Every structure is written in C-alpha cells, then in structure tokens.
Image 1 (spheres, rainbow, N blue to C red):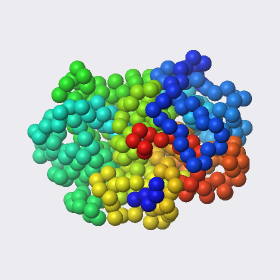
Image 2 (image 1 turned 135 degrees about the vertical axis):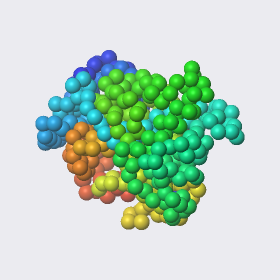
Image 3 (image 1 turned 120 degrees about the vertical axis):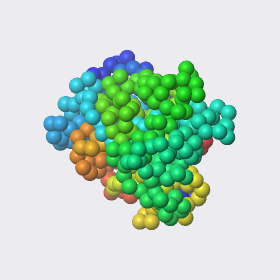
Amino acid sequence: MLKSSKVLSQFASFVPLAVLVLASPVIGSAQRQLADPGTGPWAMVDEEQVEDVCRLDRELLQQVMMRQDQSFAIVRYGRLCFVSGENASDGPGISHLYSATKTLGAMLTGSVMYQTRDLRPESSSMTGPLSEFDRMDRWLDLTALPARARINPDATVAHVLGMVGYSEDLSYGQKSHSYDATGSREINYLINVIDNVVQQNPRRFGANAVEVKDRLFAKLGLEHSSWDVDYFGYSWYGSLLDMARLGQLILRGGIYNGERLVDSRYVYNVTHPAFEDGSTRYGYLTWLNGGTCQPRAIHASYPHGISESSDCADGNCDQENDVGVWSAIGAGGQFIVGHRGLDMVVVGKNWGSGGGNALWEMVLPAVVAADPTFGGDEEAFCEAYAKGSYAPDLVRWEGGL
C-alpha cells in the first residue's frame, strides 16, 4: 500500500490528449502538448531535434552496442524519438512476441469491460457488463473445462488476470502466484469469457474475441501484427513499432488517438501489484518491480480492499509519485517497458533473459545526459527517480490516478 500520495512517414498526425494533465512537483521545462501517433505511420523526430523534443542525447543512443538481431525504439511524449536495429522497421521486423501477448490480452479484456460498462447489471449469469471482479463462473461453466484447467470455483476475473486464480485458498495470505506460461492452466479461459460477454450484442461488440481484437487493432493502428486469439499466453506476432503502440495505450491510461478504449482504473490495476500476498511483481498479466534505477509499482489501495501485505518490504513506501515501471516480457527478450514518470515507452526485441535491465542501462545515459535537472549526474538521477521523488513528466489519468 502506498503511504503517500525505418519505414517512417512525415505525414503522421499526432493527436492532442486534452483529457490528460501533465502534473509533477518537479518539472524541468515548459509543459508539452500531449500526443500519440494515431493510426497512421509513425513520424520520426528529426535528428537535430531529438534533444529538444525528446530530452534524449542522440549521440549516446547511437553508441549503444547490439547484436545484429537486436533492435530497440524509444517513444517519448508520444513521439518516435529513436529507432535502431536491422529488425526495427515495421515490415521486415514482424516476429513472435511470445509472452508479451499476455499484456495485450489484459488490455483486450479491459477493452471489453469498457465497451460493456453501460449494460444493465443482471443477477443471472452470462448477462450484463463484464467487471474485473466478476466471478469466473458468472461467464463460464467451470465444471466443463478440461482437466488441465485449474480455476478455483470462487475465483474472479481479477484473480485469473493476476495468475492466482488456481490457488486452493483465495483468502488473504493464502494465495499463490505461479506463472501460467502457456495460458492453459487458467488465463486462456479469459478468451471464452470474452466470447460469452460479447455474444449479448455481437453487432455492437463483435461476434467473438477475434472480432473484438480486430477492432482494437484497427483503433491502435496495429497494421503489422497478427494474433489469432487462440491463446492468451503467446502467439502475438508484431513489429517493434506496433509494440510501442500498445505501450502508449497503457502509458496514457487507456486513451489512444483521442479516444478512451480502456478504463483508467483498470489500467492502473494492470500496472500495479494485483494480489500482493501472491506476488508483488505482477499486475494483470504484466511484470513489475524488476530493475535498478526504476521506481517500484506500489498500489495506493488494493483493488479488492486494503492489503496488509507490504509490496515494498525491501524499499521505501513513502513515494511522492505513483510512477512504478511496468513491463510486457516475451521469451528471448521481447520487451515493452513503460516509464510513466518520464512519459516514455522503450521497446526492444531479442534482448535475452534479463534484457530489460540491459536495455534500460543502455538507454539511461542518454536520458540523464539530457535531463534538465540532473544533467548527466546518473547517480543523483537514479536516487531520486527510483524513490519516486522525481517524475518530471508525470501525466495524470482520469480520476486523478
């Protein structure tokens, strides 16, 4: 609990996000117009403007050493600031993103919750809006699932998203977190949940999870991605820059191209520890709290009531800013990493096991060198940033989150 509070085009349109507010106790320069890439091709920031527009030292980024198969990109303030690597372009760079699919699945589920929010609540099963706190057996016959499935009869959608829904005892202090790598234990059945929810009005919501996915892809401009939605655990094939679009949706609290697609409170729960007594490093199908010089994700209030478990027993809970770093991670080092306090998404391909930290360590000098407050003092920057006391580009979400 928180104790205190280069296939690139020049013709992409960047959409102002008027519903978001730039707010931080430490702001290095004038406030910037918020933007995202929209659904058109990305437009690269001109090389000579990278430092002014993106607050990044381009020369240091150009010095990053990589294997031939590696690539990475940085999006800051909604602008494509830097891309490097032979597989970085949208077309040739499409590849399997493995478990990064899980975070995509979390956002797909959240989009269905948002679309169905105005349906009349009903007491009977298979009717009404989808909520993260619905029991799974409201939308599924758990007794009809195959033997490999393990879902506690009392599990909610949130329990499954947090990978604790298989626990024999879901009471506080008794939940277990074990990674459902392929999704066959519990998370793949969220696909069936989506199918059953949208069948209430197929014309409005889509006929099934595949059609819901197609609509979400269109709104995000994911033209270099494919996902058959047979599995939540893996099977998204996408480009580096499509990964960045998903990251930007999360970074903006569920808004993309000027339209709210997912509720901000749900995105908050995706990017904060879902069930601390199971794991303090996992939100909704998304990883947290895994690196140095990064603020921890600390839940301001447990989504299912205040928790007695400390999600920062080895750190400082007295954060000034709620800006924990989150990551979608796929096998072999496929990363989407969100730095909310810096208004930045870093994406990378083929960075290997533990590559998220390696990628951040490569990018960090370029961030600090152009930082208006710390100006190259990496030690001082990391001390302030990791504590959550420095968040120069924090964008508040709807609801004050």
